[in-house]
Length: 165
Image (cartoon, rainbow, N blue to C red):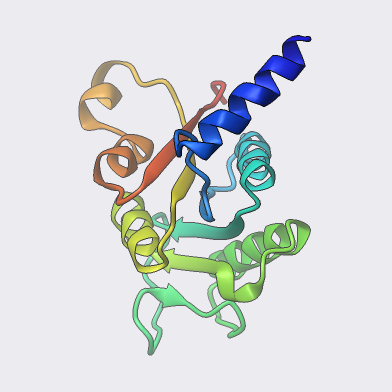
């Protein structure tokens, strides 16, 4: 009976526009130990909304590669940088696993907050899904990637609470 009432309520809420249907979801990953938790939440949102999924990984921990096309790094070109090649492989492996077209996968060098929010605006993203760790002490004052994205995004942000690593 309760499920029936929930279904009726969802139907009426969707008719009056109270439920936002996301069309394009951007999953920002850092390939930490908790990446699977974020992926699961993003897939839930994609399934619930019938949305398109895109992936982004921001390189902020390796020197900027020498590319002829700026900070967006081609996933098809090879480089001499072993770290860069590993990041490309990680993104392509996840993209293949989630059936994300190569045209919807981005590997970008830069500051995560800036690059994620810029990409979201350029690609007309409705929702960014990102992981968030609890912050304490100095880290709380300095902020986090999730906090920066939340405060500067041109769209909704789902910050998935992650356990401590």
